[in-house]
Length: 301
Image 1 (cartoon, rainbow, N blue to C red):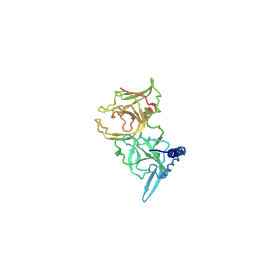
Image 2 (cartoon, one colour):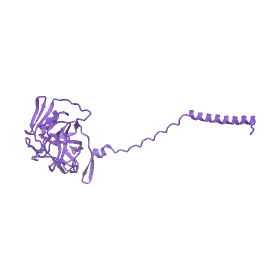
Image 3 (cartoon, rainbow, N blue to C red):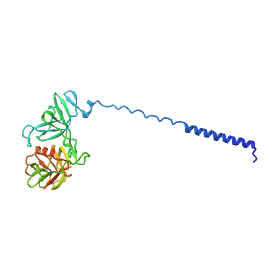
Image 4 (tube, helix red, strand yellow):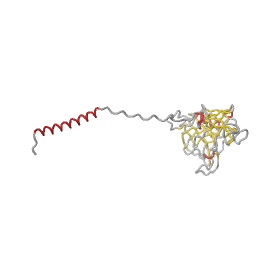
């Protein structure tokens, strides 16, 4: 086909015009600033319950046909100790645990001298303070605690303690390599040494024949001022039922549960008695607990 020069020029001019228009369009797109990213919608305002009505921070007191809401405040301390109560056989007047903050609530437990408990809050009612007890530890038989626990502040002693500490805490540092605790199963004695100096020597109760305290050299890897001990324990030949809240001044030295601790439920020190732990008088146990560091050596012979 024959194309004239005039037709050729028109065709080339048209193509150049199209190409130029496309280039200008692309250039305009490239130089146009990005559209602003839309801001996310503001968060919805959370509706919160006033502090004095939060379940964990208030107590509802039912009085006949009316009710009152009392604030449960956090105390500046975390533990209390029962220092003047009945003895290990419940002889004498026992400190009573109530299901609510007042003597009009039912009695749910009796506390013997030597018990140490953790406090979750305090409620003031009718001019008297009541401590709410918390069991925020693992319990083997939690169904045994069937109600809240409250203790009148006037009946117990405040304790200031740092609470649970373990050797694997990032803040842990060995403070002494001279301290060691020697448990003699034959003599039923415990002796605490710092170097060659005797810090404490006292009668104890180690494990019975079927549940002996393990022999060997160990390390105190955990300290806690209070624990809840429950039995029977699985895997042991003893099926004895026991329920011991607030066991005081615990020094853990085996991961199978062997502990040096205060004992408020018997006074048979000097004779085997326990399920493998080392039982001490509460006053001696507190002295040892305060003295012993994490990492202290425990030798059971």
